[in-house]
Length: 138
Image 1 (cartoon, one colour):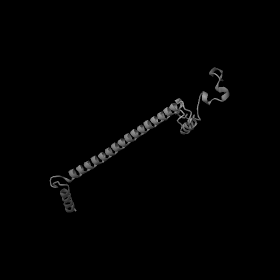
Image 2: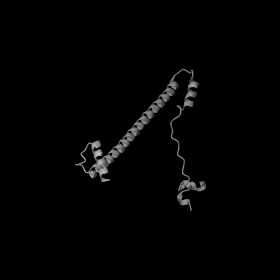
Image 3: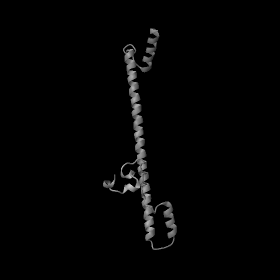
């Protein structure tokens, strides 16, 4: 068993290019384990770096898309204003209908967020008591 282990260790020495007589088994496997740990850390670090680069790229693309959309909205709005300034009356209804259908005639508003069902305070009072001052409530 010991001779077989020595033979295998010597073949590892020739494979990894070290002298099996000067490097102990514990040192070799310790260095091998250390290399593996450092390699796994590097793989994780590369993965995180790649994810960060992708995240930055997605954010950049989203920002560019938002800027393009904003520019397009401004151009449509400007076209609508320019159309209203022009003196000719040809195609006014068609362009107005197109602006209404595309939404260019409307301001961009954010939708209201719905109220929570479990509100407390004046919002939760019944309608007959909601408008009364605090001193008039019992």
